[in-house]
Length: 187
Image (cartoon, rainbow, N blue to C red; front, side, top):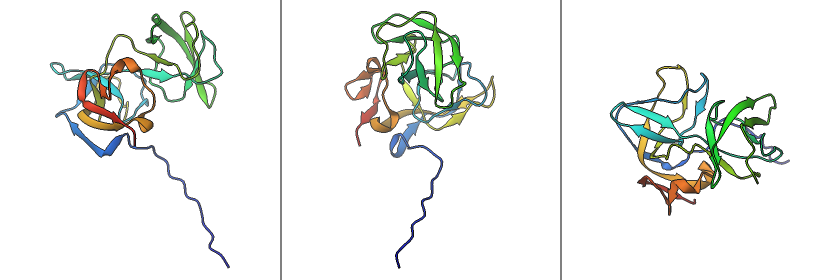
C-alpha cells in the first residue's frame, strides 16, 4: 500500500520582484501607447514617465525565437509589439513592423520593413526611441483605449531569471541605467 499523489496545476506567473516588494509612486499613470483592448501588461514591464502629464510609455522589447527569417522573425505570444512600431537590434538600424501574424498557437511572426542582418534566436528587438526609467508595479490588462492607468515602481529589486533577457543598453552594471534604484539580481 503506497501513497498516491495527484498533481495540481495552477495558472499564474512568477513574481519578478524580490520578496514581492517595491516602492510605488503615488497616483496612476495613463499609458500613452496605443495597445489593443485585452493586451496584458505584466508586472515588471519597463516604462518611461512624464510626471507633469501623469503619463507612462510602456517600453517594448522582445526576444527572438527560432524558426523565422531576417525579414519575418518569430516572437513569443503575448509580446507588447504592435503593427507600426519601430524596433532595432543592438548596433543595427531602425525598422518598422508592417504586420503581425498571430495564426500560430505557439508564436507570432512579425514582418519588418526591411531585413535585419544576422538576426537569430535570442537576439533582442527593442524600441530605440525610449530608455526605461521605472517598472510597472502590478499586472494590468488594457481595458479602455483612452484611460488605462498603471502603477509605477520607482524602487525595486528585480529577479533577472524571472524577468528574462532585455537590452544591455538599458543597464549600467546591475542597475537600470536611468534609475539606480532599480536593481537586477540573480536568485
